[in-house]
Image (cartoon, rainbow, N blue to C red; front, side):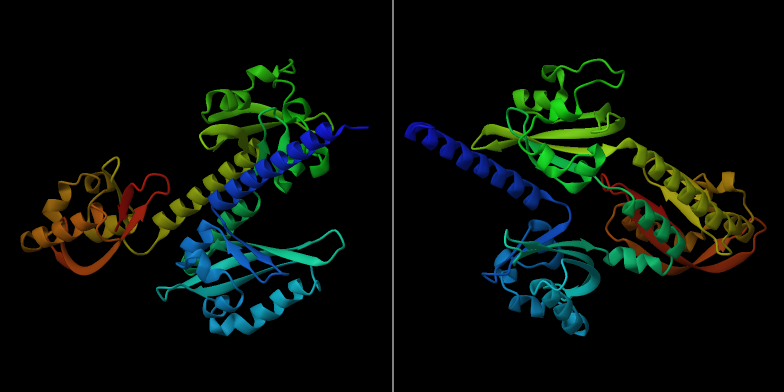
Length: 390
């Protein structure tokens, strides 16, 4: 039997554990890159994370009730979306997925792929609906021109999942998502409250014992700094090892470290992704070289210019000759050189993303031809560096 003091201590420990769990969930909820919404069926309240608010341009308070969403969902899809959502609320189905259009506060239309999950209470009564909204607007627009490549990239995205789990200061699991569970072959209840290092990270890739104090994840707790490792393995429940890449990030409460959030990816899937990407590059190269219209690509980071066969035939110059920027000074007529250079400069500097105007070119044989030039600035995803294509 526990004394009153012991019971009080146990109760306080449970409360603290619950608070830490809440903090972990809040951290993941607010920092997720995908839009997350939670609807409390009993109270009628709706909570959305920062990604949803940024996607739609509304403040959290403006998306708090279901009625407020009537102004956000596109009128053409309001009735069908409401019917399917009602099926979830009434418990007719436990999950659903569909694409729908939203009208942002600024009037622009956003296309989002929504995945819905009904959460029931202990008695099986519908309690919450969790929604994951992914902005696919640009992807859908790109399908018109790059349908085949988009399908390949979609297959790549659909085949890649990232595991996420949280640890307390003793290395015990406080949160874990389905992808991580499937990766290591455990059920959620087998991991929550247990030491993750002892269960899935106990040996190195060569099979030697891996002391917990040498684990980089433990260092994140001790030093308060994130870490990254890409030459590690996790051990599945069946005893097999899977190569992984993972990162760990300390979580602070009031300036004090209270735990760690770990993200982990199976490197095997990344290898498949790399192969798919290489296939896409080959496809792009085939389209680039076989196009009937002249195409040029100028890389701002390396100052390299690439051109296809159609452009060579149109201007009478080789690709090597067109790769030198000074060569273009002799191709563009004198009276158009300055205004064209100014407009091109605005693309290079990122002040505009597209442009189009008629332009004369002087062929190698002296003939002057008139072309319609369309320009598109392409930005990379990591640092905003730009490449311009003609």
